[in-house]
Length: 370
Figure 1: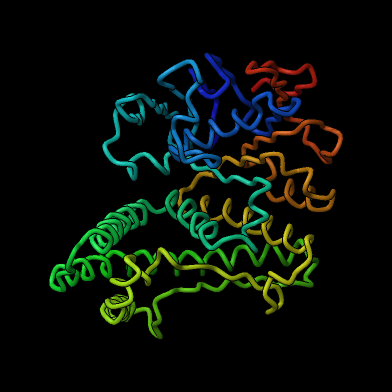
Figure 2: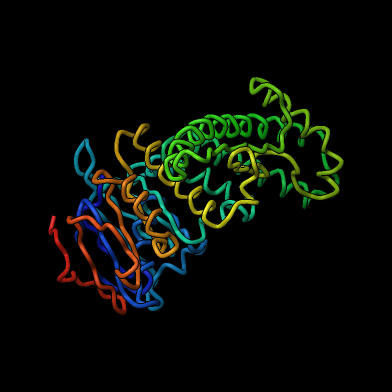
């Protein structure tokens, strides 16, 4: 899979531009605050209908305008696909081959991406919400049913929390109905995550062992707020724990147990990765990203698009080499950088773009016009 071209209209600091890309490596180069990350973000947004940098859609629209459109032409094994997202005061519209998509799960997964940004280095020691977001984005791209179950779970969770906050007197019968729905959707979410983590750990450990020359092995532990011994009992245990926590939830006015509170732990040679060095953390995250690429390919049949947002400077030459070896010629890759000086082992087939004040130009150092 690779994106052939993209057009931005009123996206961030881009008024109306278009660009065509190489199926191999594409580099966006320029000084800070010129729009390199904005351009990379637009590809991410076209894939996932959300930004990795802000929750506000208004932030994405050019300051002097009230709407934006991103459109792109995607090449897949099954043929070309036209994608489009529009944002306006009326909301958002997603289209595949010029047909409006009614549900998010119908759109997401058409174009898959893997993003590696400096903030990903916080995945190990950062807040649990970062690790849940990591799970949700990856799983959502390869398993539409997960997105559907997660959406339903979040809807009931919001309904339950709103009721706990606003009810003058909590009706135990109504709370029981919400508990039943929450445990149904929530148990499915947890089972999806358990299956995914088994696959992710297996693939990421291969890459981590390679990067560490066989000296280190990676394991991933799923920390569920729902206590269970057998996955067949997840729904039953979740429901019982919700009921046992009624007094606590009524007092705190929120739901204290469920997949919205789940977490992950990473271990290197059975030692919590929290205690690892910066180099080990970089190797671990790099292993996860390479594993994401392989998992998406194994499920969808197409390699995802790799987005490297100012992250190559965070990797030494050895880890850069391992990254470029891992993607080879199969994965269309986009890199943002202020300089080519720290990039090593670049392939012959690449396209370089100079980004300056919301404009994009093809650089003379480009070696491919595919």
